[in-house]
Image 1 (spheres, one colour):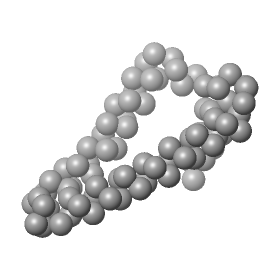
Image 2 (image 1 turned 180 degrees about the horizontal axis):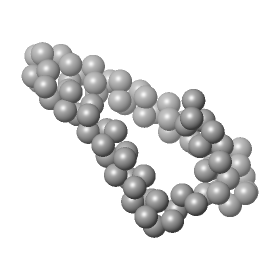
Image 3 (image 1 turned 60 degrees about the horizontal axis):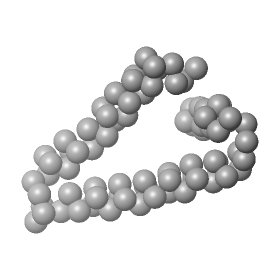
Length: 81
């Protein structure tokens, strides 16, 4: 639930206070697409006929790690406020 508050604060800053509805709509659509792609990819990776189970868990661990790296980079460059 903390992501919702962050989104409500960050989107207006990035949008520059114009056309906020369109920006929130794009954000919601991108989130839905990410869930669809992520769930499908995870399901495929968890199939033992496709890859060993460790591959799926490494891929799932990489997602939050990459997110943390991106957030750290944005914070260093002052993009987060």
